Image 1 (cartoon, rainbow, N blue to C red):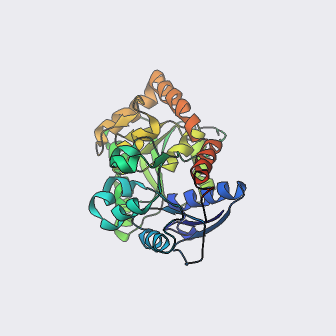
Image 2: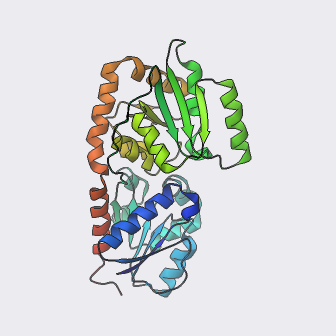
Image 3: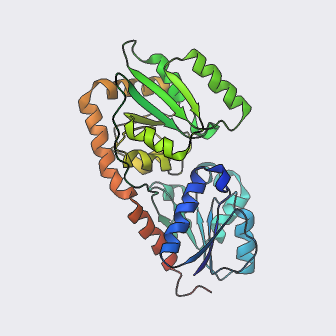
Length: 319
């Protein structure tokens, strides 16, 4: 089939949406489909549209549905879609109604949707290939935070947590990610000066992120809103346990029984978990064991198969 894949963020952004779009395009091309990746639909005919982000891609979604109402339209929902926009934004809600299928990126996603929408929803976990472990740094318990500095990620929670670590702790926290505003950059610089256990490395190449992840002892994801973070997939691929804010998008990735959750916005509890992971081998082993069990859901072959199955539902009727 001729597929147009809409992502609101192009190659230059190099964020989670872009990585998802690039990976999905590859999976579909490998299955024999022709795929065009566009930030906004250019109007050229396609047998199927797959759009990432209900709100940001709404103009393309509406235009395609208007011109080809019988052709399949699939919309993948991000964290801001699921946990904010579909409650507040009319465009996002209309995108849901126009879609023939909805995709969510973790198992708790359908809980946010009305029954008639949940019935047409499919779960596709994102994925990452195996990442070989690298030697951990000597005399340091390395903790990573990965992602752009933006409000939805609560990016300074791990930094604040370092103030509550025991004096004898060897934990050092490094944040890898670009500041998306001058205010965020200024806050990062100020925080780095005041909290010596926290370092902001800024934007680094993705390959460098994976190398750092492969030697880290922990990764922290402190988001207040998350649709299904690809950095969790990468951490599990590197056998790096995760400490995560207890909110639906993270629970949907790591499972209800995972022991590494802290309340959203609670740096004291995060500090306690970080310290426990550093000093309690049984706790660290439990984190690693459950992370390995969830890893099976997030392998590239699983993601590719689930995506191709969603598209295959429409192959007989497309065009």
